Image (cartoon, rainbow, N blue to C red; front, side, top):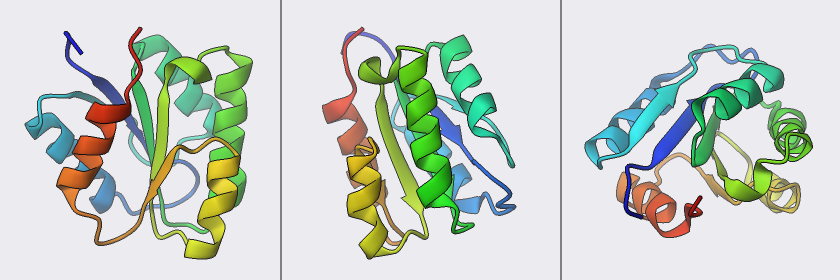
Length: 133
């Protein structure tokens, strides 16, 4: 890619813990990406509106609350309704049970990173999979 990758890091739902999201945001910035962090307790509508407004290349969502099976597919559906899903790389991370990951991928989450994932693996995934606009 000939330009800086723009990544939205979002915290959907009522989860009040953002340490992991901040670690990822810092690692992506250190890797040369532009990061837009939404802050805590974002609704799917707020996340999608920010993705549209900021014209991002990727949307990464960090979730620990257990509401991942509801919130993440809802965000994907709204990205599709706005006709931008196909232009974006959509991924997630957080405390997500292994049994739930296949369903999230079927719903349109392209990758799920769980605790202990090497930050270099997340960076490489984004760089290799972000779509050209």
